[in-house]
Image (cartoon, rainbow, N blue to C red):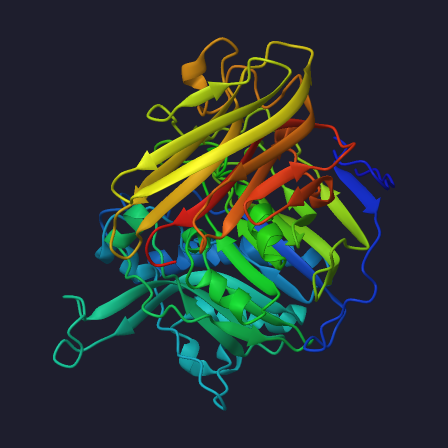
Length: 520
């Protein structure tokens, strides 16, 4: 059960499950492009059934019926999530219907359906068309949107045939396989589809990279235009920043995100992207707090407006196994045009973070400057000779500590991904709480020793970096117990972030992350 509390200036959210904060807003700021001032939205954090009913499905293909039965079970569970609220739009996570962990193209193939291209003037409504009886996932999603009178965004698998003689890129099995977002309007009509451009690691063994870097948008019956991209795409310039160039203010983000401390934590990266771009971000994540594949753990969904967390969900509590289960995160009045400060925001707080498991980002090859005094200025720099980029970072701080917390400040320029489709280089200036209080080598490791708590309060904080001129610098600020903090507590510059005067915050980390190098 939730309790409500009204605040005006407090920056750290209460540990209650629900919190309402009333804040000032820019009443005069409107965008004539959008017809409605607000809309009711939901994202679903969801854990699908653990595996299809066929053994070794990752390697040995299921039959088409086995795959369809598995996906329909997940759809039935997702459908139940929508019975709780009256909504304008709902978003399901990446791989929530099909599942994941396919090791080759043949094993994924039974989970794919042929999705028509959306063409102006052509109405495609699977719910009303018997030609889609052989594509039960599309038909059920279309009918679900009709039943609930909402726009529905889901992530599915698309198969598109090709002919090698006319398409030199046609795969040897004569079809393309895509990770695909589909959008249905309140009548069940297919509004848009998007092929994920940037596949994450093992995805490429069973899927093709989306071939278009163009920004896919759709306009809803309630007068708001949305763009969309998927999971790993968020770290790249295209297509995400194409929406910013086109002044699209509402973004859909299905994801299956495994968090890494300190700057790749799901909800904090979601907030940081929304904050920097000043857009609404609707982020739906999968839920696996017990690893189903090596050390991959996933939790953290939310709805953000210009960085303000209108509602978010982060928990270490595992949904019941082996059954599919979800959590609906709703906001009844997302401002169609993000405001500098929303009229109010409703926070669903972390339910139980003690069992959250995440990886750390190793800084073994980079200098780590320990915060040895309660006040000081620290510089850190790193040169990547391959990229011919040097990052110089500066930290100014004052802190009060009632314990033995160890913090370090580091600079790094990192080559994360060399795949030609996914070249990813980033630079970061990062303040981190170290895992072990007396071990400098643990700085950047996941926080296991003392959990996600700190005894240190920062009364002054400013981080700056000399990022390349064309970089988009994303802030990620992690509060005590993994709290998502209010942007109003900070001043965010192009290459800096500063704690506002008079504000005191318990922080686990504060980072400025920027994609650098080619293709940006």
